[in-house]
Image (cartoon, rainbow, N blue to C red; front, side):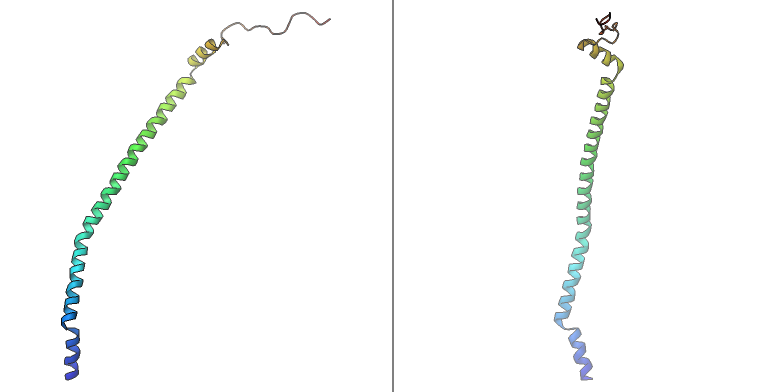
Length: 104
């Protein structure tokens, strides 16, 4: 019987009880801090997502503005105006380049 009482005392010594209590306190502290950490991490992810959505909106706006500018520049009215300013005059009568008459 003395052997069983000695082993029982080893498992329930003061050190073992204190170690178990410290482990339980650490687990409770970890469980209390984990939701706060996860919430902070989620908030940072939402902030990054918002910044990226703003950047996407700006880039899409720039793409639309460039599409409008391309449409404006490639319109027929704009091309006619450009030709008249450059002196090409699309609606003018063409000028003959070749001389009339034969070669002697």
